[in-house]
Amino acid sequence: MKGKILLKNISMGRFSKAIAVVKDQTSIHLAKRATISDLDVAIVKATCHDEYPSEECYIQEILNLTSESPLYVASCVNTISRRLNKTRNWAVALKILMLVQKLLYEGNPKYQEEIFFATRRGTRLLNMSDFRDALRSNTWDYAAFVRTYALFLDEQLEYKMQGKRRKHSSFALEKDEEDDTEPVAIVVPVNEMTNEQIFARNNHLMQLLERFIACRPTGGARRHRMVMVALYPTLIQSFQLYHDITEIMGVLLKRFDGLNVSYSMKVYGNFQRVAKQFDELDLFYDWCKSVGVARTSEYPEVEKISQNKLNAMDEHIKGKSDESKQET
Image (cartoon, rainbow, N blue to C red; front, side):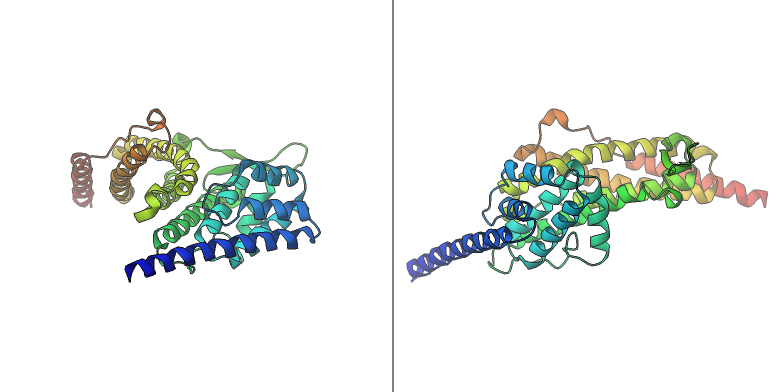
């Protein structure tokens, strides 16, 4: 009986793979009949159903075709969105998200706006919270990674777009050019930011770090090559994220003695949250090292925030509070 069930599962697995190949071939055939066929064909080939990382040649072709044309960028985003909306296969969904990350960092700058506004309109690009692999019952861990990975990319894109909003940005000032061209954003160094600017920036960074930590794969996804490949660039970006938060915490600590009680409590709250995140981050990094995601020498040494430091800050705030009560 067990032998029959095993043979049935093997047969179903082969059948699913055969269907996936047919789907890819059909998509390629339809794409060749489209207006921008080379681009559509490259996208299908870069996001096919096999559970292996995309071939670099197809990704480079997409980057080259869309390097200078806003029309091709819009077409690419539409094609990716349609394909992502149709698929119930975790491998296809993950490949598409990996392609999106590549386009955002190495592609035409127009990709950031196209993908950001498409997502905010409800288009399925980084809106993956309800994604499930409906074809097989043993893919929960892979689908979960797809969802958390999409959330990280969305949060990261939000952070990048926040820096472009000039007047509404907490991280930049507007500077008018003498030739009346469009104002350019000048990034303010952290130690020159107001307290409110620092808190706003740190909230974004902590949220982004939280999204990254949530990307830690579970179950069968922990050792899958595609998941490891997807995790690598995200991991590298987290190193800079860690350094940015550490820089902010250093500036807040230097200002701590001169802050009033209200601001001191906000700083203390930030330190409490970051202390927990750094503990989780250190564990995540240890796991990444154990499975060989990036070289050990690339990792930063996570400086944890001790409970003694938090207790000292708490006592300092209580002293400030007592002083202010005596003055009144």
